[in-house]
Image (cartoon, rainbow, N blue to C red; front, side):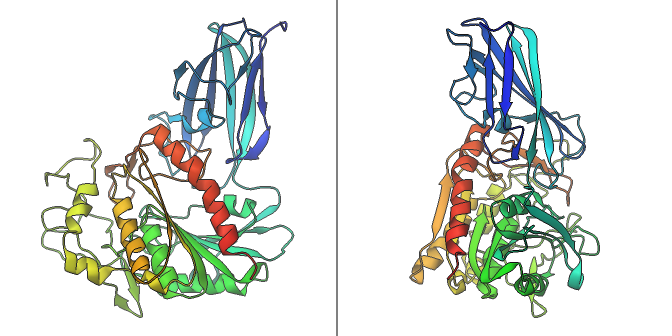
Amino acid sequence: MADRPRLSVSPASALVDAAMDVRVTGARPRGAVTIRAHVDHPVRGRWRSEAVFEANAAGDVDAASNRPVAGGYASADPFGLLWSLERDPTSVPLGGFAAPSDPFDVEVTVDVDGAPADRIRVRRCFLSEAVVREPVRDDSLVATFFRGADSAPRPGVLLVGGSDGGLAEGTAALLASHGFAALALAYFRAEHLPAELMEIPLEYFETAIRWLGRRADVAPGRLGVVGRSRGGELALLLAATFPDLAAVVGYVPSGVVHAGIAAAAPAAGSAPRSAWTHHGKPLPFVPPPLDGRPTEDATGSTASAEDTALELTPMFLRSLEDRAAVAAAAIPVERIRGPVLLVSGEDDRLWPSPLLAELAVARLAAHGRTSTHLRYASAGHMIGPVGLPATANTIIHPLRGRALALGGSPAGNAAAASDSWPRVLQFLRASLAAG
């Protein structure tokens, strides 16, 4: 046996979707080995995870292949210490773990039989050294472009976020690190852009698509779009409107247009408005039901920001009972000229993403078009790249300041990320391949 227990963590620096190899040697045979991960970031906040293992007869633990006997996850998993990270609620307000593209450090520590034994710090990155980050403010755009440092033409991807607004760069940076030229685009709640998700002109996104099309480092005719939540609705809408987009990935999306979201609760008797316009005209949308607003719980009673997180899925289900509004607001997905991949969680409590995605799937099928819809049991609204925390099941919505339920179990969210992320990468590579 070694002189004292030793911890090894590799690689020392890697992309966030790379598995983390954590091993302990020199522990007491069959002894208790507790491995903890710690993240302390000025924007992302403080996060902690823990897993307890029983060392083997040689006194070793391999966290990737050994099943924990206690802690934040229950199965052998090379990403377990990462997806089971739980946020300290007293840390700084969370802007979304993948919102900034800057790297973060993970400190891994090990206790053996209750005594501290070793610690190592490793770095997790969204951006590889082969990718360049460029802020974009051309043509009134608020965006960040990630391109290859060699300036060689790569397939282009436009990324649009959801109803939280702002400029989220992490996923775009990660896609660029996997061989794409990616433009993360803000469309409200950033700089000079509108303060709320209300009647956003589709022409703004057309400007971004044309900007990508002019780039020498973006392969001609090879543009896709990726969106999440209201951005998933938007991704389908953009591809149905602008033929330059040849592939769509929609995370927890919608096949119909929904109402806009104001920065303040609507006044009594005020009429809802569309989230989007085209040629100066608001697009038809499914309005919220008359007996409920996003600021009310499923029974219609008002709740304060400190109350239990609200589940909005029941409200959206009631809105879908208006068949005429749903038909009028349906996105003409049959106009999309390339393949479509949709990802949803069966336990989505923010809105019924499996049903909303199936509206697009059914419409495509009715026009003789196939699509791929990945549906994950026990997953909620926050499905994303693998290797990120999967424990958050509520969010404070930045427009309303209300706690909203996201749904999904940590293990279910992590399983969905682990399965879907490689399939998203493969889908984009195949869909945007040369020729």
